[in-house]
Amino acid sequence: MFSKQEQRSWMKIECARGRKARQRHQGLQESCGESALPYRTVARWVKAFNEGRQNVADMRRPGRPSVSEEVYALTALLDSDRRHTIRELTRETGLAHTTVLHILKEPLGMRKIASRWVPHDLTEMQEWLRYDAARNLLERYEREGGAFLRRIITLDETWAKSYEPQMKRQSNEWRHYGSPRKSKVRQNPSNVKVMVILVCDCDGVILTHTFPRQQTVNAQYYCSFFEHNLRPALRKKRRHFLQNPPIILQDNARPHAAQAVADLFDRLGWEVPYHPPNSPDLSTCDFDLIPKMKEPLRGIRFRTVPEILQAVDRFIRTINTTGAAKGILRLPHRWQRVVHNAGDYIEGQ
Image (tube, rainbow, N blue to C red; front, side, top):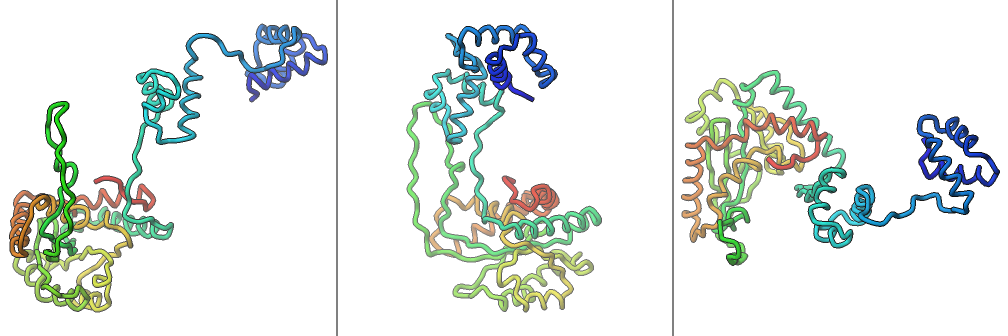
């Protein structure tokens, strides 16, 4: 394929050799085939070259620029800086605001997308581990169905603090145009806090356990928690786990992955699937239960640890009553998305 300017350049050379328009047109047809310029165009350019024209490019025409020129101008600006605003593009090109929007959306098919925040910069190996773990769990779910999900118990620990600042969307208010915006002072973190373990399955939160003050989170304490807290809670609230041992879905924090904890699970007959590193988007507590537990606490100031624990218990009961803890049921969809993303992080919920 030869462009129009390349064909014109060849015609200019042939004009210097004294070839006639008909001969040049035949030569173009032999070389370019169906993309050759028509004879009338060839004859017009031959006449212009014979009259002394040197430039093979189109002359700029007066009046409003063509759409292709407008598109070219916008493309050049965006190639230099993808963060240009509509106002900047309008000022640089001299086009109307609506024209810039139309060109961006229609001919160029572009939209402005913000960078997504990710927990970690995954290596190629970590992406492969995430892909492999999600694929194996998804295949098992496809074989066993809902019975596989009903065997899953997920748990994690988190801090419950005396004050959690509200998220920006929680402070949104309906106001008239021109109304002043409220100001919120950034609060300093408080030393009044308590660590709790949340344990959940398909039917809701099974257990909320409070770490004693000054207690180190280690493998020994976790073993004691499973033996003396979780097992009695399962015998009392989830007796079906006595016939079908649970599948413990937890992250690979050091106390969770300790050999003493693994030995305890082997003795109890509990299964622990592999959890890839740096994967909070595959941990049900991280992406579902803990945010739902903390959201009602945001913006409320508590003075003592007992007040914090009373609020946590109250909102956990609300989660169980409303059936809001649906993270385990959403796991197959998340596994599918990780497989589809070749191990990359999931964006959004």
